[in-house]
Length: 178
Image (tube, rainbow, N blue to C red; front, side):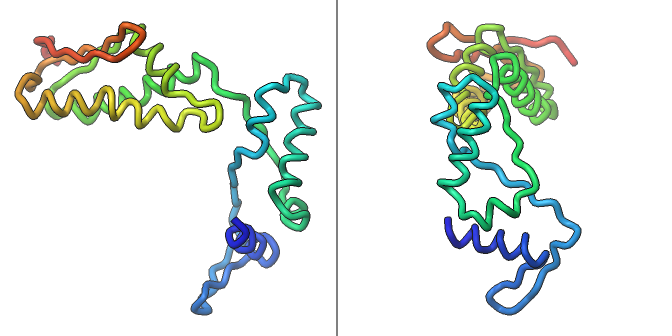
């Protein structure tokens, strides 16, 4: 977006930003971190490190004007997330959900199969782990909320999250007291 690039150029050039009403904000002690999926499609087939850098540089040249690129101090490349990293992200999201349920003394147990399913289905080559949150909301949190509302999941119970490799299943059982 050209307008966003212009705003960022003003920040990088002047160390300050002036809005449409004339108010100026200082960026003199600020680190600006930007992310981009520039050249992500082309990178899916590249394995050589030097070639990766060349593809990214070419992608940057196509996406940004030279004066913008020249103001970047560095470009950091991230490798795609592997299965282990995705499973860690799923565990983190499930732990966050379990913390929210802890007031009701509801515990969550996730099977290895469900963990693998959510990690696999929650990853997108282009968007990384961003889809995993929506997947967990839809296939885990939503059904759990429905169970709480309909009374099939009560205080002190345990939620079992499982998978048959094609979908997530949720069931409640009497839990051990925490």
